[in-house]
Image (cartoon, rainbow, N blue to C red; front, side, top):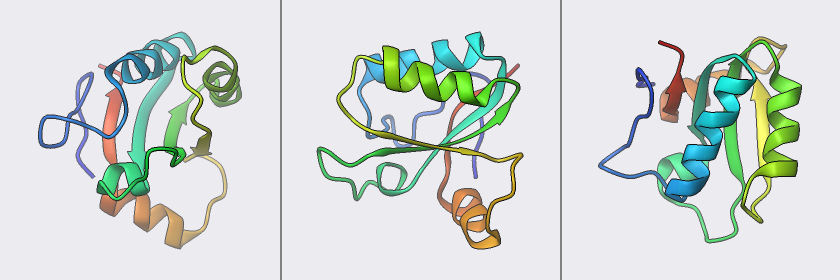
Length: 107
């Protein structure tokens, strides 16, 4: 997994809109997250237009972050937020580490 100081673009882009990417970063800062990683079909570039946005996060207020995405993001897409500090399967953790694209990391 590659990470970043603020925003990471794979090959100059990620498979989400610039506006949504900016909102994810803004919400991450407000919720005191230390890292947000895009994974799944959007990180692999195999997504469809309506594919959900899979995000793995670490930090203080993960539930607030998820609420903000669902309630305040200017997007009709659904979000799947995984708290990396909770108990998750080893297989999921390996998938996130292998294919994840860091969108935000606390400096």
